[in-house]
Image 1: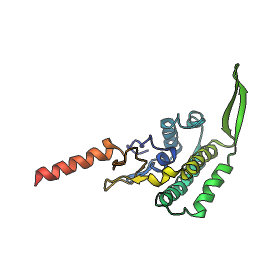
Image 2: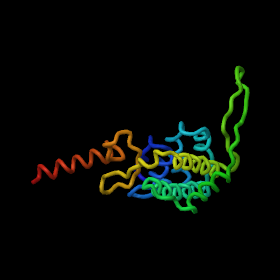
Image 3: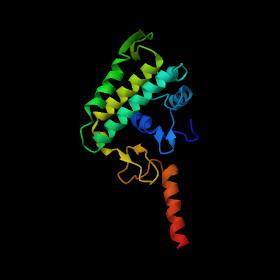
Image 4: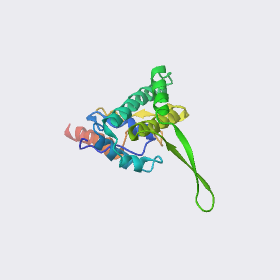
Length: 187
């Protein structure tokens, strides 16, 4: 992984899409994927288990494929355009590759239901991420997704405030404000 720390805290699919930055790909090896999963550990049921699993290069490839199709679909949907059938089909296929079931158990006081996926760790992870993409694409909030206003940033975010312009106020926001200040005082 590069020295960049992935931006997190956006909807899971945007966090995934944002692992491809202007400086490069943050998910090039199984260890990179494991580190990213550790950052996302509270976002879905099997994250902690999968972060410690051997995801292998096939797992990284599966996740990167989901990321590419999700990025294409989100880009189209945020502009109120129809995502390509190929992107939507790929996200559906990724979910089918590791089917989910509700695993029932008794905790001593009540029945609990925990969603679990079957299959190799990399495919399970890709399926969870494809499901997150599918849920987000079906949410009207997808139309509010924005690209960071910094010239050299490609990250996406879902603004909580309508005037938000940058992916992160500490990353791009400060950099843009400092550059603007420098230009004003240099003239």
